[in-house]
Image (cartoon, rainbow, N blue to C red; front, top):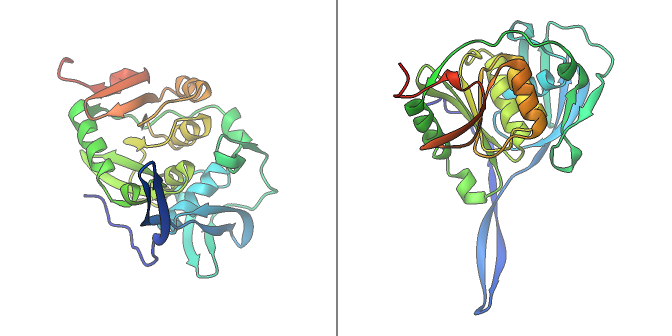
Length: 265
């Protein structure tokens, strides 16, 4: 089982609803995922803000800064603090620069941003690995049953990371980008190396694939579909891109040789 993330804050609230059908109406209580604003700072300079599920916040802060182009590797990260006033303070061995030129991504409401330089720069070689189809089946099943939060609220995305034949980590958030950023931040904080497989319940748009490939993750999987630019970035970087991932099947758009089946020698 992956490391359990500390949960000192409630992740849901319960609110009453009225259910209306052709047969009439009735009252019912539903659980809502908690969405909380956090500001991310780097060496005490404010970089940006985001609405997040209040868990895995240290990981999110580091992953957010990676996507914004301010942090490039794990060696640069020194300390991370989650402050009670709603601030994630990251201290890293980097010089603060002027705000990066960013591209507004396909995040809901146009809230997602990623540094333009991440699109333009050449890709470093990926940290190579393979995964068996049996591992993928176990990976997906364990991810989807990691917690009841998705079932309880129908309002969160999940993202897991598989390495050394085990589920190393799994994070959830109200935003698909945030859930991926939490996994990337955890890798940058030394909880795993990039040589593994990532699985997200969200679609694989350009920024999602780009951040994973930039960090060196060679196998990128989703329960849903890639976009055309997500596919193009997988081709440029050489990443394995798998969509419509289920325990019993995959649709691999690029570099299928990293997935080992019983039919391969």
